Length: 204
Image (cartoon, rainbow, N blue to C red):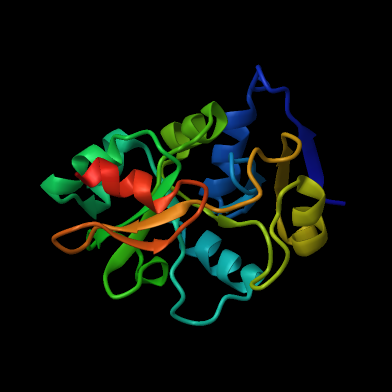
């Protein structure tokens, strides 16, 4: 039976982040809450974890996988255009498509680019601080229902996940807006919870 830990909104259980780090370091998978959908997490530098995630998700070969990383660590894995810094620092629920550094596993990228998000809650932030960048793909099989709550993720992924972190229903039933920042100006790939116009206003 897959283990589920029920989370308190205001308190992260003692020892939980260290436990998650051990799971990720050993090539395991977690399901964790974000403000949009539940995410399926593997350490991005764990070959075993990424291989397991790709198999569990059933993603088509060559399809990129998004990543959560800390704002102060983003230059470890991506190149940042000067014109895009204001958008990166906006605090909005966006996914940024950026040029990946050579150290990023190619299975996560597409044509040398990486989709990156910043943590949108303290738990994800603490996990990234302890374990480094983690995958931010949705906690379902490819083409499956959007995981708005832990039950959907559990029904989709079952025993293939080492630990489920249940924080109740997510705040939004919609994914993030995806912003391509690999060129000389901003380009919206997919509109999500943040309207295109708001991103364009930031770009100026």
